[in-house]
Length: 237
Image (cartoon, rainbow, N blue to C red; front, side, top):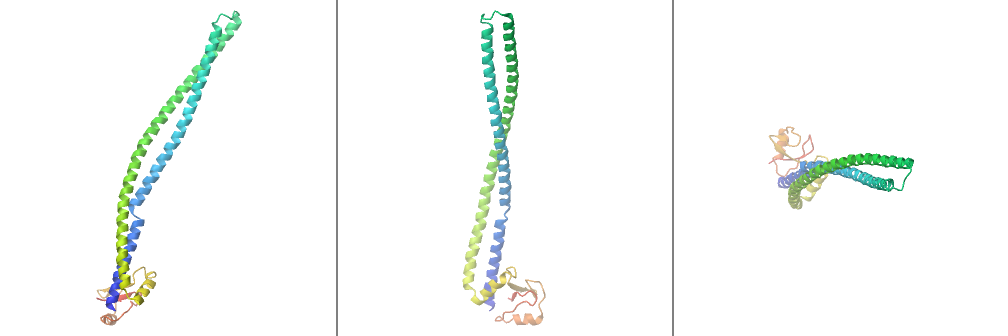
């Protein structure tokens, strides 16, 4: 019996290691770091996309302003052509044309000032986008670096889990079927700690001292006995 319990104890040790490695895998710090970096990268990308939309809007306004100035310049040219053609002899009509030219030139100056302001906005937006693009490039490089490092760590843990599971299956094949059935049944309610060694006359599971009569019974290698306090199967070497 004692030898059979030793096999179960080794199985239990492997099961607990598999559970711990699985928890390590799910909560590995590199995963949280990668998640945070990815969110930061996506945030910067979203910011850059918004700026790009703003830039496109400014460029459309700038193009519209340029077209408007072009049309005003064309109107001024026609008005001046008419004004200085010599075809107009009336002083009143000449004065009217001069006022029209002045009005168009004033409008043109105003539009040109607007265009300059738009050009400045476009330049600022382009500078901001260029800065963000550099940040994104560095952030993406860091994300990939952490991702590669994380994959190495994760693959290492997965490899350990696979190796532990292979050894675990070997032990399950060696285990006594009835004891294995009991082990599987009790593992859930006892937190995966079914077999408890006797250490310093105490149950390893609940740290309660065992009576001399229980210790005496456990000296018999053919006996299977549970701790009266926690219900774990006791294993005495």
